[in-house]
Length: 104
Image (tube, rainbow, N blue to C red; front, top):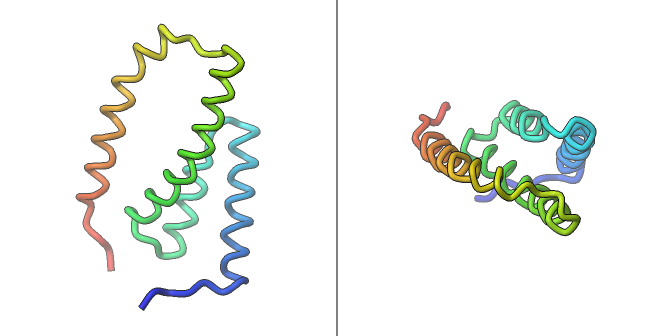
């Protein structure tokens, strides 16, 4: 059976996401840290917490990247140098996360 969220519980997650995004917008970081910590504290597994946060970050990061490209604010030479390491790190991190044991 799939657990159902009531409106009060959903509201808590919406407020947490809003606050995390405000901090991220102001500092340019910490959305993942705040959101993942909150999800883990509520009992979500590491894989679910990571997947949920990364799904949300894909949208916001994609829109931000599109804005930078649109405004010609990308150092393409630096991007080409950094992209391979970022991709490799992401793949290794995702693989290791799937291998972590589930805690009861």
